[in-house]
Length: 293
Ligand SMILES: Cc1cc2nc3c(=O)[nH]c(=O)nc-3n(C[C@H](O)[C@H](O)[C@H](O)COP(=O)(O)OP(=O)(O)OC[C@H]3O[C@@H](n4cnc5c(N)ncnc54)[C@H](O)[C@@H]3O)c2cc1C
Image 1: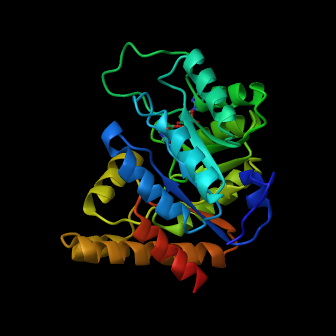
Image 2: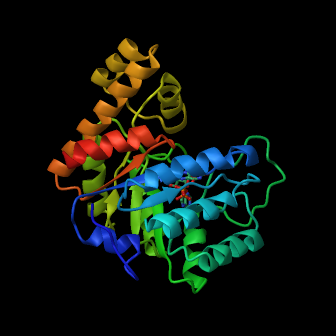
């Protein structure tokens, strides 16, 4: 795995090198009491020396401050460049600005600028931001010299009427100052390849990093279908049917499927693949090992 040093900690630099690399996503603790176990899991994943790690942001939650803490720890203790996520839709301008300042002070150079989802029943939420492109602009104006990533949806964002409409808004978001995009999970690589071509012909020229989710339990499958409307190929569904009731076998089958997806992406010229590890070091390790072998 390549390892940038010194000032070359920006993810855009890593993606520019075009060498094969693998990056991992982790999530911060959802409660104060789980901080130690999450920190330990993220440290085990960081010790595998991925090309970078992203740390998600619990929109509006009281533990959202941990995103920066976990990202800073990974960067300082393991020299792994980190990408701290930030959402805006349920925050005031003041909160967002102070989070940006906290990131800058913590030495975070990469930020994933997201809209987030409006929590159910949160009618009295702040309405300072409507879309992620507004956060991208805010980050660009902050003077933080951040490398900024954004989300994209090969199977179309659930609120969009069509792929064309989604791509039009995606282009506006990129033009607001994005350096790269990371995709929502998908289980059929053809969906990514077709999306990539459409994005390029819509004038979106930044790197589009595919996001791969190794499925290790049946709940993840239900969540992927409900939240993202992910298409599940027959071969994948039959694996779930066969192994879904056996957690160990399901993990093995889900990791093997993700490894096949990643190998195919590399074979088709994709340089960096981002893996949603769900904070499972053994999953990250198995995938990394298969890539190196
Ligand atoms: C890689 C990745 C990482 C993520 N990480 C997190 C995380 O850490 N925390 C979290 O809470 N959520 C996270 N999410 C989920 C994300 O917050 C949701 O999918 C959310 O619904 C959309 O966020 P966005 O940044 O893509 O929004 P946007 O880019 O704002 O798009 C949202 C919708 O609005 C439409 N739209 C955009 N601009 C306009 C406009 N000007 N007019 C009309 N419509 C418009 C888009 O087409 C789309 O349908 C992540 C998603 C991905 C793919």
